[in-house]
Amino acid sequence: MQNIQLTPYHILGFIYIAFAHQTDGEFSHEEQRVVWQKVKLLIADALPYSEFTKLMDEVTRVYKLKMNEHNIEDIVMELAEQLLEHEWFTKHNGSTCLHDLKDIALADSSFHEKEKRWIAQLANIWGVNAKIINKL
Image (cartoon, rainbow, N blue to C red; front, side):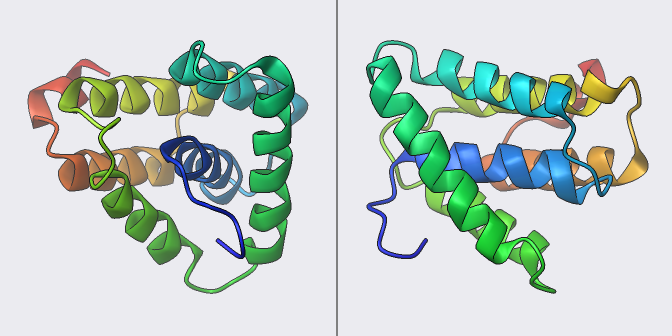
């Protein structure tokens, strides 16, 4: 992602923002709030808040440059695969991310088919059992 040292947190931020926007064509203030909240929870105390806001600003800037590319879904899935290479990633964290994505989807009170499809694709990439997906 353009001159940024990719951390798992950058990747997650990008995936979460792209998911919120690309699956239904909108990125509401409520979705943005939930995205920031969920990424911050995943980061926990790894970064001070000022660094977290800088990270999210970087990710948002890069997303705005990429959001209209015809292969944005492929970009997201490739980033999901890259996340597997980071020590941070565990199946537990993958499952948490999928639950986060459902919460992001429901921020606008609906759960679209495209959102469900993206979650299923990400679960497959991250090796999360389909039974967990059904519990979502």
